[in-house]
Length: 320
Ligand SMILES: Cc1ncc(COP(=O)(O)O)c(C=O)c1O
Image (cartoon, rainbow, N blue to C red):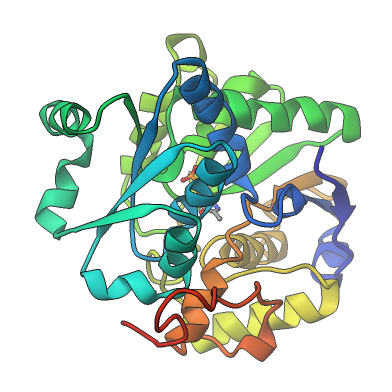
C-alpha cells in the first residue's frame, strides 16, 4: 500500500482545504505510480496464458515503455517496444534504460504509429510474434482498470475524503478510479494535454457498461500549460518551489501540472472550505532524465532519478 501524506502549504491553508497526496511514486523505484497499477494484472494475465513476449507502444520518452521494460525483465518475458520516432532516440535516457533491461525497440513513423488501435494492424503484429500479448499505449485496458481499482480499496482504509484528483493522459487511470469508486467521491482528472472532449470519450470507452452511468467525475481542461509535454519557465519555477517547500518529487509533465492546477483551483474557490482532497502521485519521475538531457529543465531544480546506464552506448548524449 502506498503512503498518504499531507501537503501543508499556505495556498491550501488559505483556501481552508485539507490536501493529501497518495504517494504511488513510492510503490517501486522503477515501476512507479500508475504504471505499477496498470501493469500488474496485465502481466499476471501474460504469465497465466503462457505468453512469451509482450508488445506495447509509446513515445521516445514514455514512462510506460520504461516501466514495462523493467517489469518484463522481472517476469522473464521478452518485450518489444514500438516507438514513435527515429532510431536516434534509442540512446536517450528512457530508451537507454529500456534497452538495458532487454526490451527490443522498433521505430516507426507517425503514420504507422497511428495504426496502433486498428484491429487489422494488431492482428498482423500478433501473427508476426508467436505467443505474444499486445498491451495498448499507456497500458490502458480493462486489466489496467483492475489494478487502478486497488487505489480506491487502499484509500478506504487510509482516510475519508471528498475529492480524488489524478492527472489524465490516456484516461486509463481515471477510468479505473471511476469504476472502483462507484460515485462515492468526486473524481477530478487534470488533463495534461490540450483536448476538446476526446479524453472524456476515451474514459467512457474504457468503462464497462456497469460504470457508464456514474456521474461524479469530470476532466479539468484549463491547466495543460500549452499541451502535452509543454511548459514554460514560470511553470518550472513554480514546481521547483513546490519541491523545495514539500520535499515531494514532482515532474512538469504530469504531477507538476496537477499541482499547478490544484493551487489555481484552490485560489479560485473551486473547493468549499473544509473539503478533503486526495491527489494521486502517478510517478513518471524517470521523465526528468530525458528533460534534463534535452536541457528543458535544470536538474538542480528537481529530485532527479539515477542517471542512464553506462552500458548503453552514448547514453549521456542528447538526441532530440
Ligand atoms: C506519470 C504518469 N502520470 C499520469 C499518466 C496519465 O495516466 P493515464 O494515461 O492513465 O490517463 C501517465 C500516462 O500514462 C503517466 O505516465
